[in-house]
Length: 294
Image 1 (cartoon, rainbow, N blue to C red):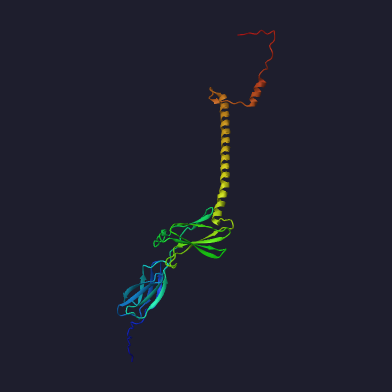
Image 2 (cartoon, rainbow, N blue to C red; image 1 turned 180 degrees about the vertical axis):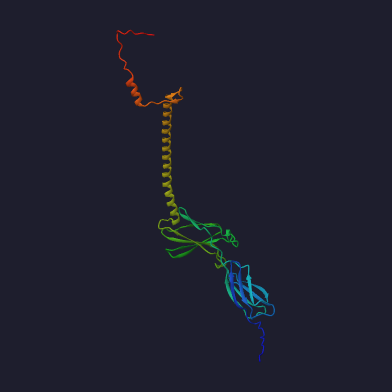
């Protein structure tokens, strides 16, 4: 013998297993299960989103017959804090959770330029990679002095640079730049941090490296220039000597050129010596021999 028992659904039970699937900068995907398995009719859920920073509420309605429900909450703010409540439309018991959206990214290419009595912080505009950021919101700058172990708020700006003065020689500073915090400093962007190490000289390490590279260039460039000038003079001297030898040989060849043979004739020293030996020596004339003039 057996008996079939069908339980009566209790619509006063809360949704089960409420959790966050994915959280972005302006949205959050949440998921839950129905109060009981295999609903036989559409169920109406109320999703209440409380902004813990702005102190505002929004309510969304979701109607479905699925046992597992996935819902995307949109139009959230980067770096925000929210309290999400899900319950049936008849205001039954609720399930709740807290979510934090992803903050805005840190500014890129933060660097320091050292001037005579101050430094300048430079960075790329955050609007280049964050569509949710408006330049009118601006940036805020903080400074940490490791020697004094204190953090100071330097101010905010809507530009992409900031001037910092009155730095003490021998102190090491860390500067952070981030999207300006909203509503009592609760909605901030990720900070970009850069270390400024004076090493007791009043110059940060990056500027010192640049100065060293400049000094090396100031030495190497003149040396290379002198080498090039010396090589140029050497090639010029060799070229002039080559031209002089070529001209001398040409003149010598032209002086021994035979138009009858069509070539230049050169004789060795031995041949000249033999001709001198075989030729009779000319001696003085005798008074007995008459001189004939033809």
